[in-house]
Length: 143
Image (cartoon, rainbow, N blue to C red; front, side, top):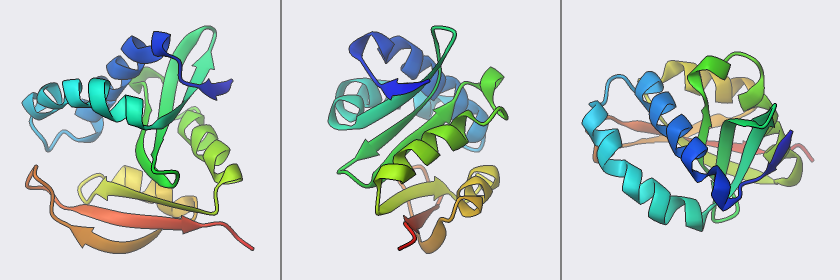
């Protein structure tokens, strides 16, 4: 089931964000993600519209939208990956959107391929504060 995030989901979402970030971004030191956790919890989550995927009363993944059209996060708990949860969350927001943009680290080829298979195209490459570049990608709904 996909539903809107509620404050009671915060710990589960933060646990997923941290563990999945370490797994997907093993090229960035774990200390970076630890330092960012407060920003994600206290600034990012309150400013975004977040959807959670719940299975048997457990939050297994989430997707956050910023400014109405930017995917700021799509993470699935490591033990739940490969079961279509990310696809379901992305499909859920694509149904209601005309345009979506996102950034994905260049080294995260699995995520880049995931988005390309779902219609996202590469727009540009940009530097980040981590020292690792990101691709900026966009999806446009079919007319």
